[in-house]
Length: 77
Image (cartoon, rainbow, N blue to C red; front, side, top):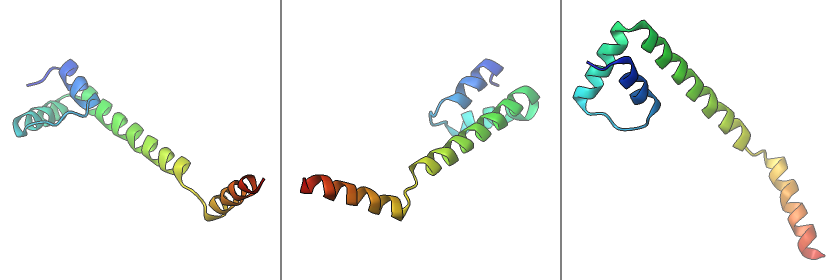
């Protein structure tokens, strides 16, 4: 079974786990309330960052049209 330090390292990395490693990780998370809470917090942070990134990179059609008009106007000069 993994230690807390190993569990934190695995949760913080994006490495692919084997079936056995996944079982060992889940067993540790099942028995360790601290690592389980850390895992939930980490997932919440990742989800929120994804939401914020999507919101920042979303483009509105009006904004795109405005940028196109600016580019065309500068090219005409």
